[in-house]
Image (cartoon, rainbow, N blue to C red; front, side, top):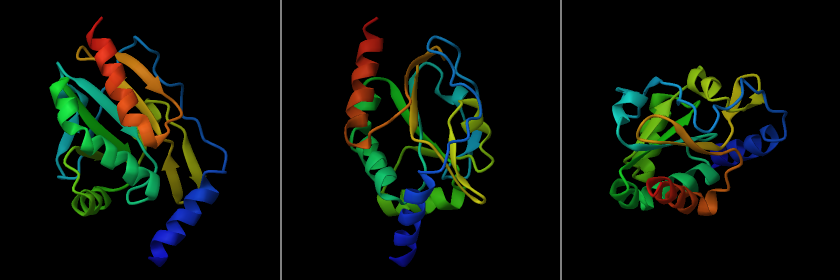
Length: 177
C-alpha cells in the first residue's frame, strides 16, 4: 500500500515536470515505424506480427497505477469487440518485462504489453517522456495503425474513461472507408 501511494504521489509530481520530446509523432497516413520489443511472455513481438490487422498501439506511464489500470481494464473488457473488428491491442511502457508479468497476472490482462525501458519505440513514435533522473514515464498516447501499416488516427491526450470506446469507433470508421 505504501509503495502504491508513493508511486501515485511521484506520478503526480512527475506529471508536472516538463515533457522531453523525442521527435514528432508519425503523421496520419504515413507508414507506422516498425519495432520489436519483448512482451510479458518474455517473447519478442513485432509490429509485422499483426500484418493484415488494425493495431491499437497505446503508450502508457506505469504498470499498476490507477489510470493505467483503468485503461488496461477497459481495453481488456472490449477485447472481443477488437477481435471482431480484426484489431489487436498492444500496450507499451518504459516498465520491464517482469513488471508487465506482475501487472498482467494481477489484473488478468491477456493482450500484449511490451517493455521499452530504453524508450526506443517511445522515441520512434515521438511520445514525450516525463520525469527526472531514474523516474521516467511515457506519456499516455495512442496510435491506430491500419491493416496495411499506416497511421490512421492519433490521440495525443488520452482520457482513460472512454478511450476504448473512442478507439473502437475510429476502427469502425476506418473500416468503412
